Amino acid sequence: MEIFQYAFMRRAFIVGIILAIIIPCIGVTVVLKRLSMMGDALSHSSLAGVTIGLLLGINPVLGAMISCIVAAFGIEIIRKKIPQHAEIAIAIIMSTGIGIAGVLSGFVKNTANFNSFLFGSIVAISDFELYLVIGIGLIVLLAFILLYKELFFMSFNEKGAELAGVPVGLVNSIFTILIAITVAIAARTVGSLIVSAMMVVPVACAMQWAKSYRQTVVFSALFGVCFMIVGLCLAYYVGLKPGGTIVLTGVAFFMISIMIKKFYRR
Amino acid sequence: MRKIASITLAMTMTVTVMTGCGSKANQVVDHEGKLQVYTSFYPLYDFATKVGGDKVDVVNLVPTGVEPHDYEPSARNMAALEEADVFIYNGVGMESWVDKVLSTLENEDLLVVEASQGVDFIEGHTHDHEEEHTHEEEHAHGEEHNHDEEHTDSVDPHVWTSIRNAKIEMENIKDALVEADPENKDYYEANYNHYATQFDALDKTFTDTLSQFENREIIVAHEAFGYLCHDYDLTQVGIEGMNADSEPDPERMTEIIEFAKEHEIKVIFFEELVSPKVAETIAKEIGAQTMVLNPVEGLTEEQIAAGEDYLSVMAQNLEALKKALSR
Image (cartoon, rainbow over all chains, first blue to last red; front, top):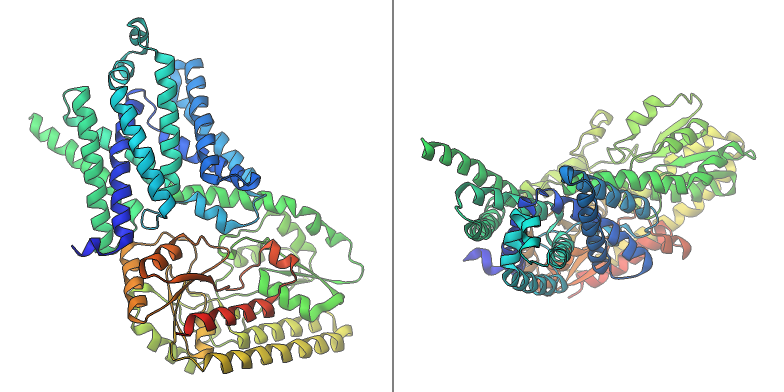
């Protein structure tokens, strides 16, 4: 196929499909916890890490991971303090992240450097990013399979899970770190737009059709991969910006799925 | 979301950066009889400094290391402009904020200079007419563009990338300084003549050097080199069109890769103020190397510290072009 003739498109597919599997898997838990804006909040918070990294001379991707982990735990802590309004936690952390990034960016001398770590593009992926995504993909998938039961239980009833003997605190921490690292890397590589949409849109589609938790997870990953492939092909053959195309493909699927379901019910 | 993030950041960035430069802008009060000259971005600052010498204080509005396309003036800039004597900008849509700023200012004594006056403008590039536009360009040079057309988007604003145009801009600046400060006319004229000779010499070196090569095509990060290419009969192909910093689409990238293969291009140029990621991806695809070709829109802090200026950066560009065009 002509589309695979170029190395940059092959990379886009590899990285895109890996992320399209792991981000919706994480997304199921995130959505069930009513934290749909988490991806957005974390990818913006990671900007703070990038700036700090550039200023202190640490690798900005590492900086992004650290700030994402801090932000994710920050969301957890605030969420526990005001359980009725989990979304407040997200808004506060996101503002903090953007605020820090904005203030500190004034001290970054080289904007090119800054921009290259700030915004990823799925059609321009370096070797380093490719291996990073493959690595994190394996870790997340493994952790997700191992913690499957615990996450399932906790997603619906955290208190009940605790009473049943699930180490809620530990599982929550592991999961939070996983989200943070995934978002930090994915936002650098493919851009925060794809990350925040992939965390929610495939899950929303899957919820229309799935009859169980397991089905929701599997369908979410399948929908994710499907949007990614269709979006990348559209972007390539029609000549569109890839990030937006992938996300809009997902949204279009979601709308069609709602409409089909409406007729189906009648 | 990416757009929003970049806008938010750009805004906060300018605010913070400009607060940092506040001390400089505040010195307006302290005149010492020198002409207070404000320029929009680097090349104009450099030309104004060259001509004005120690008779003027030149302040550059776009901060060091910031892409001029990303810039918005701050409240402090506006306050400083109210006190200024001369304001120099490039025009032709390079500074989208100028019209708004000028209509807001109450400074009636401000002498406003559009430095690109008198330059033969060329059409801007759009990706869709990759083949046709080279011909259109030729036509555009032949006839004089009238000034009403200046602000349309289709005109390439990067006039200073041609050394000949840079000289015209410097001359416009010299005329303006003479108008604002007729007492020092001879001083400004002498400075202008001194540097104009250097500009001519560099232009001649460019012509002599570049005419030796058979290859005439270069691939650049964004299409900022239309005027330079026109002077020396080169063709630029831009990865991201005329505005820096937009996400490339895959179709455009394959076009560039095919173009590079066809013309056996060995170097992909990128700019210091724009992320090199896309240039690197394309270079890897075709086994080329990446190099800096500087559109002199702004210098980095290190370059300023090293005493670089328009002429020295252009001389480096010539070296880069030599490497890219030789087989």
